[in-house]
Image (cartoon, rainbow, N blue to C red; front, side, top):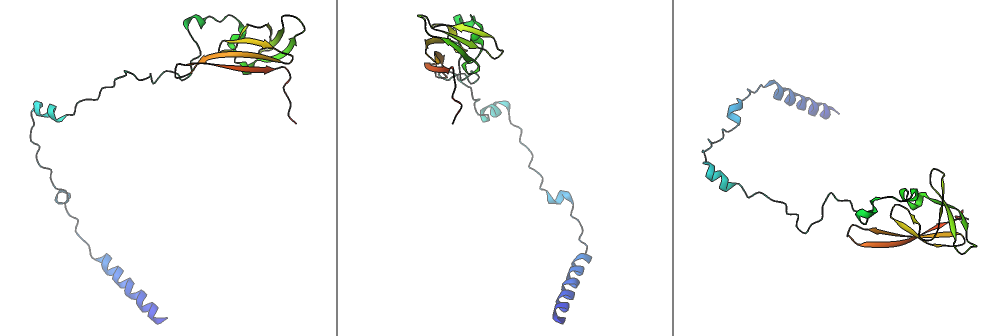
Length: 167
């Protein structure tokens, strides 16, 4: 145990001896080397040193600010003919179907609660869909839209009268 005290006392003496000696601070100018004087270059030499500026060439590239999804097919589609074309198909609900006649009809309800009667060929939905068939409990709508590769794609969406409640 006494050896510990001796070692501890020795370390304490060394620490105090290192602290008591004051070092003089060096001047800041002597620490930093002075930069060499700049040789004056002529403007022609500086122009040669600058690398040619990069120029963006949009040839063959798509517009980076253009939307990926195009909703309208042409400028003729800008006029909305019916209120049902203001809503997406997921926002509309089939509330009734009259299918016992030669011309089947369906009652479609918009989010505000207004009902509209549609038949085969009626325009419906934001993507200019057309009702193609009306069945016993479903309305099938065919939508045509343009994707980001400028290709026209079609899909058929079924709107059910009675949706299953699971289980």
